[in-house]
Structures are given as structure tokens and as C-alpha cells.
Length: 316
Image (tube, rainbow, N blue to C red; front, side, top):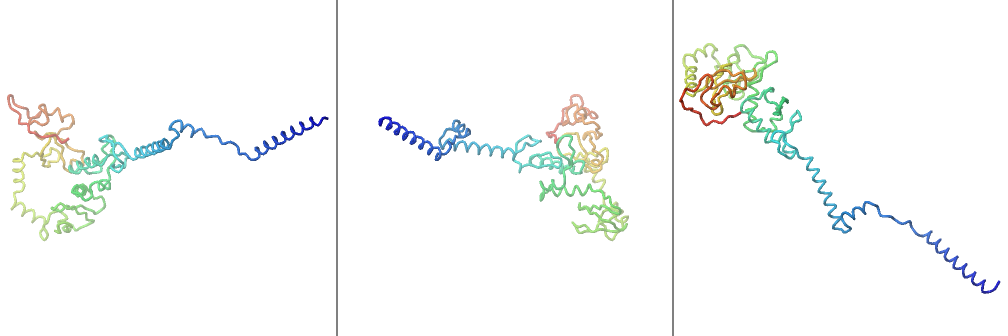
């Protein structure tokens, strides 16, 4: 072969070897390419690629988490339908949840009306009837006058069920539960420190019951004076239990507050004529001129007579 052809072949081989060596070197030393994940690409398209856009993304995520947390910490009162924070709520044993304002207002009305038996002091939700426990009342009113009234009323309603146990109520209002006592014995009142007769529940230590009541009869005209007071004040006796009832305000549809009537399911009567009302619709039908007027079905308004209706407001 010619020298010129040999030189061309050698140069081509050197170029070929050099090219092959360079490619093989690149393959041995280079890393595989890293492709960007699709999520950052999408986020960059949505929020942009700057630091401020990413900060806005973080703030939005944080705000959503805070909103979800606050939503879990709030509830809607099932009485007033207002939204409250959970710490302002009162949960009853039945699972119903009300705000503290509504539950405390409901309990206050019940306590002031002495409707605190297990059958009366129940969940305010319709058709529930779950009793409200003493601990729940204590959690709302402990240390207040209403708590003391609740306890004293519960004591009045208590009926001993153990053999030989008996309830004695001192004239000062304190209720004493004793396990046993002699027929003519006395018990010490923890409130006024006086000795109370176990039999007649009066304070006449050292004197028999018969002698004490004879002294009361001879020296006091209590019944006559009380009847005069009832007449002058316009009070009316309950037609069921004969307990005196007074009304300071409200309509003429009355509910007796005595223990006997409450334990029997309640007694409603007309404050004008004193007749027992058997149907709740008589709250309206018994008073043709309105439940606040001075007339009823048994005491009709005379022709031309002006009504003496007072400015009372119905208490419910």
C-alpha cells in the first residue's frame, strides 16, 4: 500500500480510538439525570417559583388547619341555637349539649319553683326525660343561694325507705334524718341547736305534745289570724291539697307548688274561682277575656263592667 493511504488509516484509527475512549469515559463517570417531581412543578405553576409564593402556600395550609381545629372545638346549643366554644357548654348524661347560659337559666327556674325531684328536674329537650344529676347542678351553682335552696328542697322531698328511719323537720327549716328514736324522744337540730320532738316535730323539750298543743290552742289564734291574712291578701287554697297559694305576678292559670301535688303529678287551678283545671287548653278557654283579666268562666264579666286587668306578665 502507499504511504499516503497508511497515514490516513492511522489517523482515522487514532480519531476512532480517541472518540471511543472519550465516550466510554463519559459513560463510566456521569450520573443518571434527575427528573423534577410533578408535584413541585404543579405547585410552582399554582403559586409561582418565588419564595414569597411558597410562603403564601404555607400560610394557607396553616390557616386551614387552624380553622378545622376551631370547628372541632365549637358546638351549637340545642336550646338557643347559638354557636359556642366547648368550654362554655354543659353536657348532660343523655348526651344533649347546651350552653351554660341556657342550662343555668333552666335550672334556676326549676330550683326557684322547687321542682327538683328526679321526675321534675330532667333534660329540657323534648321527649328526653333524662334526670339531671346533683353533681351537674353543683357544677353550675355551687356556693350560691340557689345551691342551698336546691339542697334544702331535695331534703324536703326526701322520703325515708330504710326500716326505722324517719325524717324530722325542725321549725327553723332544717331537715334531720334519724335512724331511730323513742316515741316521746327528741333530736338535736344541727342548725339551731334546739331539741325537736320526734313525734310532732315541734320544739317543746320538757313538755308533752298534748300539753304543748293545748297551750298553742289557748294562747294563739293562729288559724283565725292566717285566714284573715289570706282574705286580705287575696290568697287562694289549692282545691286538691288545700295548701295556701299566693301569686305576686303572672296569669290566673295557677300550678300548686306543694310537695303533695308535685309528687302526685301537679295540680292546676284557676286563681279567680279556685276550681281545678284538668286540661291544659283551659289555660285559654277558661278565660274568655284573657288569662290576665279578673274574669273566668265561673265568674263572668257583667254587662258594661270595666275590666280591672292588672299589668302582670305571664311566667310561663
